[in-house]
Image 1 (spheres, rainbow, N blue to C red):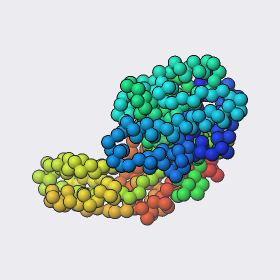
Image 2: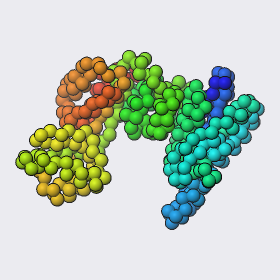
Image 3: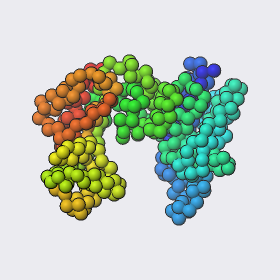
Image 4: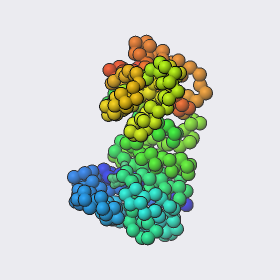
Length: 403
Ligand code: ASP
Ligand code: MG
């Protein structure tokens, strides 16, 4: 039995017309010889009657604080409604579906309501339904505690449900259907000819931070990576091939760079360690920053200087810490961290040289860099970021026209 997990997000199941497209995708799966297991999110977005946020707006903040068991029971309703509505749609197409809560599908969690941890997946019931030639339609984002209460597994958790079932059932693939074609080589609002990335490794998706997290929940990627199950991001509204996330992508990639993303509102901080005493105790500063929950990025520790970046929202707190510790420092506001991502860059010489050459040609100052096996980061002033990203995107031939 070749099992395929097909997860449909809130917008995909929000209207009758869209649910007809969902049925087409399931039919296509069956035509290709797969036994589909469908996972659904709550219908629509905030404002629409059964969306998770709409359900949450029905109860007081007071209740939310004190009755997390009740909150999970309420939130779980959105997905449960979708399972029955989608099953109805399948029945109209002569497909026998079995709507299931997460618990009925065998997802067992601990009892940390609102953000429960998965204990195990008992896949027997799903396998029996599949053997009968029926389609299980599972409520995403929820499980059941061992005491028998409905739990939810964290916002955006339906992707996680899909990945969990994919691993438990040893599916051929987990398809995540959404309202975009997949992961792009750059943000299309910044780069007009940004193109779709057809294949990418699990690790690279984490590097896509914002963009990656928007199309798929990082926890789902982590689970699929551990279980070595390929994930496919696809558009319910189109026939586009989408983006395949797997380990194979690393072997087959010819590109050193697969995509570029960026994060703005960064502030670069330089601490001068003039006296020996400063230098002996410099860790006190990092301790203080941690105590105030200030997260650091691009950290370079030199004997005479410590350089790092922080989010703009933490600047006021940083100033207070520096004053209290009596440290000399300077900072550059309005910076953007550009990430060039590509598992294929590992062990390839000259990638950094090429990046720096492109930026120098554009007369864009690079304020700081860092690198890992899959990513090179460059910090630039935000006023230059759009130009930098476009030049890098063009020169690394990531655009749609150049293929
Ligand atoms: N409906 C849930 C949420 O809005 C889960 C999901 O959509 O993945 O967070
Ligand atoms: Mg989602």
